[in-house]
Amino acid sequence: MKDILKTIGSDYWCVIESSQRVRAGQEDCKVGASTKNFEARWVYAVVTFLHKDVFKQPTHLDWAAQYSNKAMRHMLQGKMSCLWAPRHSESPMLVINIHQAGSATLELQQRMWMALQGIRARYPDIQGIIGGDF
Image 1 (tube, helix red, strand yellow):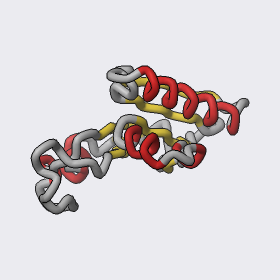
Image 2 (cartoon, rainbow, N blue to C red):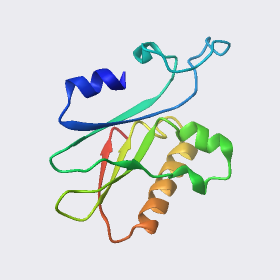
Image 3 (cartoon, rainbow, N blue to C red):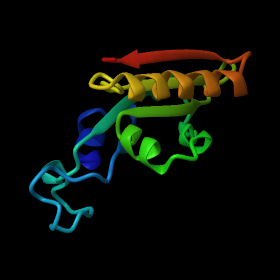
Image 4 (cartoon, rainbow, N blue to C red):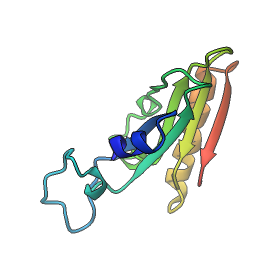
């Protein structure tokens, strides 16, 4: 899937964050990459495009490390992407893309906001963009 998106938007960096959870009823099937990732059984994915004229290659930031509860990390995977995005002519930015993180449960929503606060606390002077459909 990422290769298809790269072809469509070759002027953009394409970053995908996906969970390894499988769809209901397909728990016994193997989950893995294939040439047809758009048919994968992953439940969640967040895709972020950053224009190459503005940004150098972004890298993932580990926002989930602050959670000792494995279940909460697992629940947020594929619903939130946090990127360190160096720019060509200015200081780097934090780019956070959220896909319905916590829309179903108040506890998960609180965890998402706590993750955002933790990220901002690590980089208080860096500009950022928060986007998505949260």
